[in-house]
Image (cartoon, rainbow, N blue to C red):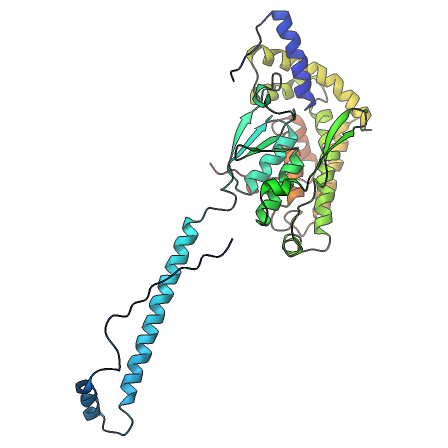
Length: 378
């Protein structure tokens, strides 16, 4: 985010210097199948006198004339039962095959910066849950792609073209609530996360959201979603940790030296949506600016002189919290904390900081499992 703001400032200066023109863009009830059952005009064991007389001649023992009739009745009844059972199974199978998959009734559009850790969190959630979505890459300088929005940050997720979800943690909590319990619409669920105005540490007005780390489900769904005693508490704790601590270790590490800063901005420009001049100034001047800013960030967050050590400790603390007997923090499947931590760390892939982290911490096995769990189907 800070890199994007830096790129915007530098690119505006570049346009003034080069006198390049500015861009202008034109504007639940269960379905019970009704099965019609018609007998074939043939009655078993209820034939006419001729049929009964032949049976009696073959078996003159008293009362035995009823035995073949009962046998035919039982056989016919069993056959009818199997026919109805098969028809019902076929009908249910057709209903299941025709039913939409969970979440595919949603048309999702994600407005993002690809290299933003908060946007990466949302993508990790969507991919892990198999939710199809479209991506709109936002130009971090002009931001014309979100000029229609009063909320000027990313990620923004549009649902069915009309409902706007802001803030990565809110987006994830709202969608998870919807997927677990279909009792309410997404619009109704969103009311559980009220928008509030607050001030940050610098005294600047910011927008915050209440309850954003909570999945709002009924007790029965909560027991299924969080089977362990403290699993819900742990998920919330580590989701907050990813947003309030881990994310602040990224910039000081990827802009640690001038060389790393240049490599980071080369990656940002390559993966982002920049114009030719914007990209040039963002890469070289942005890298220099962020190298300087990273020193301020180190002091603000009270990091060690070697910021790598803070990154290593944070990642190893996370791995220790998972424990040796679990595949993920969520057990056999990733929970929202797994996805948040993975989303933040993933933005360093391809950079020196990421390679160092994989080599000097115990995170590698968990990280590889998360890559598989969030692999997006093509």
